[in-house]
Length: 145
Image (cartoon, rainbow, N blue to C red):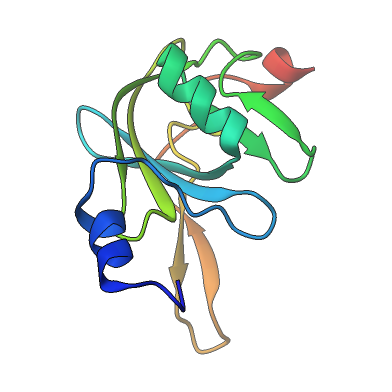
């Protein structure tokens, strides 16, 4: 908002109008957490249609950048995400969804509850990834083929 007036900034930051600031690709980042315990489950992107569907249905929809298509999270696996609360950040360029996950209660395509199942650890040989204690809750090969 380079040329925004003080009134525009006030409306963006304090007003009641939802006016997401989609990036040049028409996307806004979505951070997804568990509604009950706050665990970060995933990070995704939403286009206008995904945001509209999420708000109208109460089921999380995203835009897959790799597949270049709308994506209803959990449609294949049964791990649908029911949105209990949606928030937007101060400059309306990031969404935060609090969800309850159906099915196996897993969000990651690897079968785990969260996509954030590896820690980055500094070592003498540079950073390495270490698995945390989480285990897959379902076998992805049985679900996705």
